[in-house]
Structures are given as structure tokens and as C-alpha cells.
Length: 346
Ligand SMILES: [Zn+2]
Image 1 (cartoon, rainbow, N blue to C red):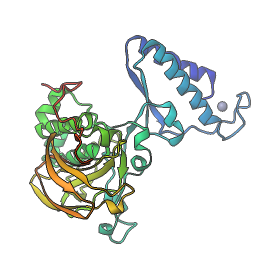
Image 2 (image 1 turned 90 degrees about the vertical axis):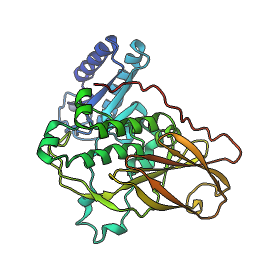
Image 3 (image 1 turned 120 degrees about the horizontal axis):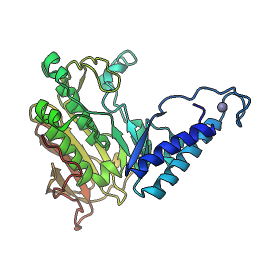
Image 4 (image 1 turned 120 degrees about the vertical axis):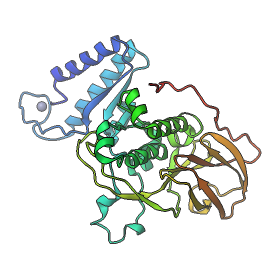
């Protein structure tokens, strides 16, 4: 549709306001801005013939009107989209991040001769994370995965859930609660750990912080199995290799730094991690060092401004956060368990 057309704008507005009146707290505009708008040659429309910035301005009008009008009915109303583009950031409250589950480093095999020399960064989150709220595409595990693949897709989905925690993306499950529990207690437990990290101790970093360059660690590689009926596309997805421990690094708005690690493998992994703030764009000063394991905090002493090598051991599906906080101050990490907004139960 032409987003400048009054009929289209009014139809979207009417639909949204009707939902808001029934206490719907938010909507996702599907296929926007993920799908393209065809160039319009209608002489009777108010925009120039062909392409141009009129398309953006049409959407800008729609988004502003929908959010303003819906919030008069429901002050909590949020407007989100399928995918995101920079120009729409001021007008949306969040977006569905569809690539989080499904990008494999193996896609880039033909472009590079040695993938081990390449490190990947999540580009959108590196540039815009603190200006946007992302939620993932559905994590699901249907009976077909269990019966047809002999559980081979489980590692794929565990990695996907872990990636949400490492990149600060809200996980999203579109399965019935009983299915989730019955088919995979591992996924269910890990999902709740990730949700807890985003909601409590990790919130100032992975949710509202600024991303730093990824930690360099040397850990065993593991392989995913075949995945059938991938959510979204419905396609099958071939096995690929990835690090058993995935990680990220963050700067909070008050200047604290945190490194996050999670182990997707089925066995405990040992590795060394070097803290070196000289290579980061943050003050390299003496700080207190803490480790937080699935929410439990304890002190690891002091980082004194020189390279510090730490020997780490991480259990399967554990989320480990290393925190550098000001000396002699409360580390201001919320570690106590909170009541989750939604409860997963059979
Ligand atoms: Zn038009």
C-alpha cells in the first residue's frame, strides 16, 4: 500500500484504536519496514510521481498518529515493527529482531578463506542498542523436531536463547506452555535464566547499556544438528559450528563494565579470559571485580589497571557476568529473584 493514502492511514488507525479500546497493550506492524513499498505512479496522489522520501513521510505520519491516538486510550500502549530501519527509531517502541536465531557463520564460508581469523559483531546492536528495544523471533520446539531429528535441533535453539542474553534481546516463545515443558525442560529452564538476566542483574548492561568489543576467548567449538521447519521461513537449516561459550561486553550509562558468558554445550568448559581496558574506549582505572553466576554475586578482588588473566569455569547453560564496578561502592546489581511477568507452567 501507499503509506501516504488517507484511506490506508485511516484503516490502520481504526484497527489499532479498536484493539486499544479492548485493553491491548501493543501491536506489531507486520511486514513493516521489513517489506518494501512499491514505487507509486498514481498521478492523483499528493506525492511526486515515482520514488522519493514521500514514502518515509507517509509512514512517519502513520506511526505518530497511531501512537498518539492509542496512548490517549491506553497510556501503556507500545508500537513495534517487524525488522527496523534507522529512520523509524524515534517513532517505534521496539522491534522484532528476526535474524537473532538464524544467522550462521557458515553463510560466510565462501567469502573468507579462514573463518577462524574473522570475528563477528552484531552491527545493529553495536550502533543503536541503547536507542531501541529488540525482541526475538519465536523460539519453538515442536514434536516434529524431536521425532524427526532425534533431538538434533535442541542445540540450535539453546544457542538461539543464549544469543538473546548476550545481545540484550528479549526472548519470545510462541509455543503453548505445556508443549514447551513437555518437549524440552532444558529450553524452558534456560529461557527463564535468560529472562531473569535481562530483567534483573544484567539489565543495566545488556538491556540499556552500550556494547563494547566482544571478549576474545579460546573455547571448544560445537556443532548444531539439522533443524526442520525453522520458525518464520519454515525451511530446514543445516548443521553449523559455533563456540561452546558465547559472550559479549557492555558499558552501563553510569560507567560500570560487564562481560557476559554463557555455555551452550552439554559439558562444563574451562577457559582463560583477559581483562584489558587499555584497548577499550573507557577509563583504565582500578575497579572492584565481581562475578555473578545466574544471579549470585561474589567478589573476585581488584582489577588494578594492568592485564588481568582470570581462569573461568562455566557449567552447561550457566550465565556468567563479570562486573567491573567503582571501588568501595555497592556494586548496585539486583541479584534477588523477581516474580516474572508471565509464568511458564503446565
Ligand atoms: Zn501513491
